[in-house]
Amino acid sequence: MPAQRLRENFERAGVVSGENTIAYCGSGVTACHNLLVMEHLGLGKGQLFVGGWSQYGHATERPVETA
Image 1 (cartoon, rainbow, N blue to C red):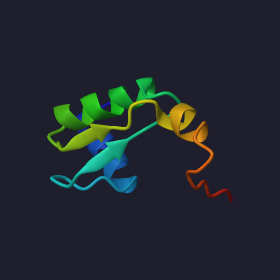
Image 2: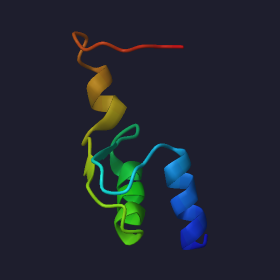
Image 3: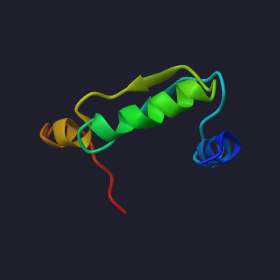
């Protein structure tokens, strides 16, 4: 996918260049790909929530909102 289209997709998802973004997924593995692409595009300041929903969901004291 062309870099410009990737950038547009990230911006549409709410990623703002230069601002801190936390990436997460089910386990933390797939989110790494997003962080790599963000770095390549110069969006920077990405952080990984290691463990993702798999880790978060096992802690019953943490809030989870469902739609």
